[in-house]
Length: 358
Image (tube, rainbow, N blue to C red; front, side, top):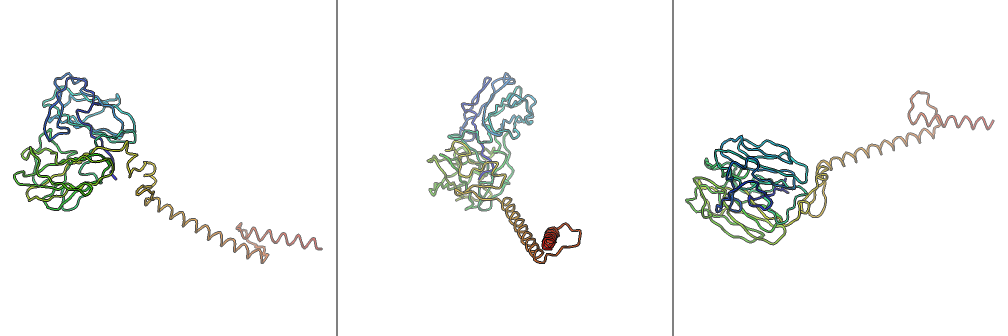
């Protein structure tokens, strides 16, 4: 199960409210939805766009190449500090409705707004929306000799970074990537080093395989994440396997991220969803049943040991008490133990009976 679910919101999403003159650029293959946006004038210093979302966090990557002091961000009407290049990553937020306002004025280079991402919470509507999965996500399974370091130094343009600055690389035939998801479509994005040679990969979804080569328009001298493969599917759970079928070093296949359209209403509808309270208590769900985590199991074992110890102690005391009653012996010590008290009572009762008989 992914550690978190991330909603991808394209710059052309209808819920993004542009507050000043904005220019849309259409670029084939290398950007989300083949578009990115930028400002037309410095009037955007009072507000470029505003976005209201439901979730637990938001991330905006809008590189300006050089550090800019003319960028401001407010979150829920409170000013927050963007990074020097104009990007912003929020702290963890309470799950619910939030509003981000982004403003940028005079900059040395055109700011490029391709998309933003939202960390989904239970309140986040997901049905039909696009989720993005980074190559570094623990739910992505790799087989073979993948590396997180590129085979050679890559010089990216300021507007063409990798998603979250990470990728997995391979130059070995047979290396593969596997990911399971619940949705109605899936896309694979990455990049290639040395496009002068042929490179192919197979894409298998639920047992059906298709092969693809290097996409047309792929760049090598200025690396950019490329659209490698896409498939529309019926709603439900699916398994994607990407397998390298023809690659030769120093050529390399770079896997950057997966995007898919969700077919559930919220993360609470996902098959492996675990409420935060249950997860904290060690409860996990899977295959329609609830299991116990290591902490919960350890607690149960300790409880059983304590119970058995108390039971044995009780039996021991009961047997000792029984022996004392049979002997009717008054102990002379000052020990206020269970045996002392019961023996004293028995001796006093015997003395009373002897006096009555007299």
